[in-house]
Image 1 (tube, rainbow, N blue to C red):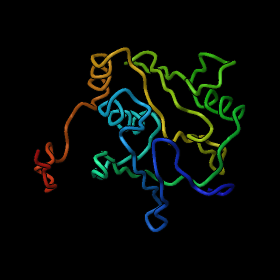
Image 2 (tube, rainbow, N blue to C red):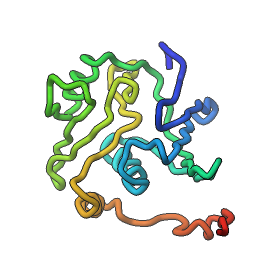
Image 3 (cartoon, helix red, strand yellow):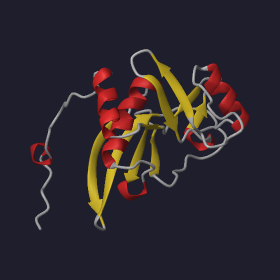
Image 4 (tube, rainbow, N blue to C red):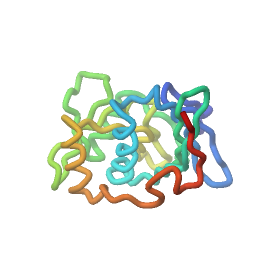
Length: 178
């Protein structure tokens, strides 16, 4: 980014792949800001849908008995907005701010088919302002009351279809015995 070097946070280690114009993110599943791995993975689908991201799940690996996910997303050249700019900008882009005095990064998307969708973790390090002033959430998460509500939302959005290999064995990765 222009103003500061790219750095990861609690969830991800990051690297800029300049030739591809993408960011490689390695997520430690034990440090995720979601209740489950399923929630994290479906949050990637929801980010692609609601924020027009192009998040791609590239694979996974185990290191020191900890599972890591490898994800790619487009690089956004810009700067992180300050808190006031973030809140004002996201509201101008159509998100609702349910707690105007709070600094938790929680917003709501009004969706025709789903009603109100809770989005969280949109703090200043997870949003980038590009040269046009548009704010790009780069790491958002979604809250649903329970798994059934999340599954129902995914179904309504047509995001409940499996594509690609459906098992690790189909992808050619070795299975761990034990």
